[in-house]
Every structure is written in C-alpha cells, then in structure tokens.
Amino acid sequence: MNNVERHQFIIKQIEKEGHVSVVDLCEHLQVSSVTIRKDLQFLEDAGMVFRTHGGATNVNPYQKDRSINEKTNLHADAKKMIGQEAAKLVEPNDSIIIASGTTMQYFAKEIVPQNGLTVITSAINVTMELIKHESVDIIQLGGPVRKTSSSIMGRYAEDLLGDFFCSKLFLGVDGIDAEFGITTTNAQEALLNRKMMESAHKVIVLADSSKFDRKSLGKITTLAKIDMIISDSIPSKYQQLCDNLGIEYKIC
Picture 1: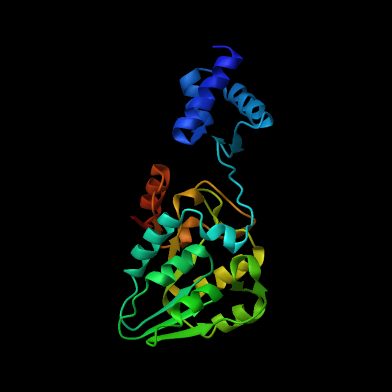
Picture 2 (picture 1 turned 60 degrees about the horizontal axis):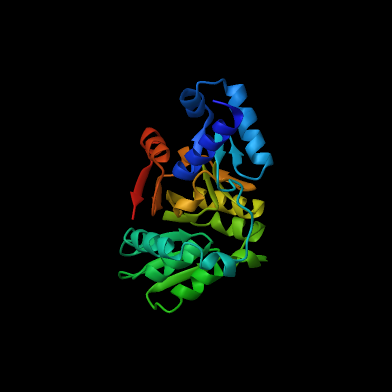
C-alpha cells in the first residue's frame, strides 16, 4: 500500500470512528509506527486531521474559551438530558455545590427541591435559575466575575469554600482526557474547582459527549479523583477506564 492509499485509509477510519490510534493503524496497515506518525503529521499539516497523544482525530482536541451565549445552544438536547439525570441525585434536605458552565444551568433548571435544599455556587446563571424556589437556600460565592462563563472566581470565593462541606459537587468541564484528566479553559476557575472538590464528599462531572478526548488550559484534577460521570454518550475506552478506577457513570 503506497502513501496515498494509507492516507485515504486513515481518513476513512477517522471519519468512521472519530479517532484512530497509532497502534491500531500499524496493525491494520502492517507498517512501522514511524511510518504512521509521518502519515499523521502529513495529514495534520494538510489540515485534514488533528494529532493526539498516540493517534489522531477529526475534532480539535484543544478546547478554547468561548462566550456563554455561544456555548448555551451547543449540544442543548444532550445538556438537558444530562441535567434531568443529575437532578435525580438531589436528595431531600441536601447541601450541594454547583460549579459554573452552561450544563450547570440546564441542571439547575431541572432541580425540583424536596423539602429544603442548600446550594453553594459560583455561577450567577445558576443562582438566577434557583432563586425562584422558596425552599432553596443559595450561598452565592463572591469575587471577580468571569463574563464568558457568568461565574465568580478568585481568592475570595476560594476562601469562603473553606467554611463549608457538602454532600455533592456537580462539576462542568471543558475537556476530559484519559491521561491528563478533567480541564477547563480558565486556570483560575480550575483552582476554584479544586477548592470545591475539597468541600464535597462526592464529585459528579456533567459532560456531553463532545468533551471526551479534549483538554483545555486549566487542569482541575485527574480522573481518579472523581466519583461519577453523567453524559449522553461515553466512549467505550472511557467506560473501561471508569470501571478500572471505580468511577460510576450514567448514560442518559
């Protein structure tokens, strides 16, 4: 098989699977990893694929910051389903932390308080969704506002979290990578998310399927330190990884 035929095969596999690995391509094409890496470099230089650790994909694996207005309508149906599934985990008289992000706003819309509920949140849009419920006590974290996510971040919010401990943290992310972990596009927000994790018994990640095999600037934590993932679809390799790490997952 010549160069052109290999390139055509690689592109078709990526179109079919969304991602290919160097190991699998070596096995299918019976060539060395050096040859495959040169092929992937050629295709990336041509703007046809994006190289990843150990393979390639047709989706840019690096998630950049976008405005909340732009992100709200992306994968809206998936976010709504994820929000509905997550809302089932909110118990009577619960105390929870809700981080920022458009998926968190969809989640807040689905919450039906049972008796009392205390919510600590950095997200202004989450507060606006929950303020209509008389039985919800809201603790809005304070500090500088990050406009692209309609959320609070910074030292004041981090310090206040040290005074609380909740049953669950519901966390939105911009990327989930098997090796690097879960990430967000802002480094300061990643720090606040880590502080939230210290103030919660259970960490629940809400992420639509587009977030897998992506990573952003700010690392929040490794996958081993989360307890559950809720998504509309989870790639099989991540399901296996969750099983190995003892992470629960729900597909809605």
